[in-house]
Length: 283
Image 1 (cartoon, rainbow, N blue to C red):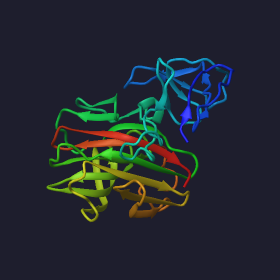
Image 2: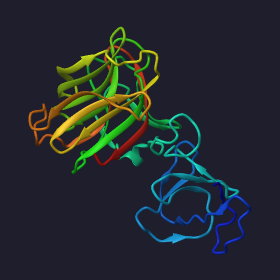
Image 3: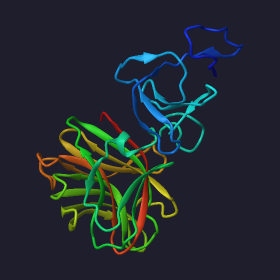
Image 4: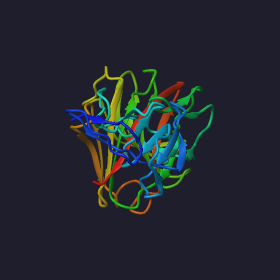
């Protein structure tokens, strides 16, 4: 049943036939600015004081982003179940560096840049590098969790561009990369790195399951507290497991999980990828 958004005051006008009244409340706490629209972002998820008057901007009354136009029209912004576009029901809110918590620089050498754009976070290196990982990190969650992302495939399709999820002991030490890589064709992989500039051993490397014509892929990393799992999907619903290992016997060991993030690997080619969805949930 469609909602009728008719005012933002304490009054409740009669609803037209076939609709219901919805009164949105906004917080006065601005937490940032949306890079796509330039509108302020407000967050009421922490039960901060709220008001009942309309204000132009983005509001998160329950963790799902909505947009309030200057005319008081509310619509979805950044996915999370709004709209009717591809993956609209399962996308996270539009990823930004602040919103995802990906604010710690990770081996950003050369001409690397991470930029909030209208489709997510653009990760770009305009200089062909050696085998390195460049990207952004956040603190590793303290409890069991599942990270699900939607990312564009490494572009251009040229040797040896890669991207994906990284877990690391530190910003300069041991790390594990779970993602995609191009070497004449696209591969899924899991790899050890001694440092973000020192490639180690392959844990998984295969073209099995790769749809070579897709411009994007869903990747999932799960830590259930005991084991790690790496999976992929092309519909965001059904995930196929590629690799699993116990945390204790993994390359990072049981105590080496301190950072989680997203990287590109611009080996021998200038490249870019866009992180289009980022969601951390319970296992």
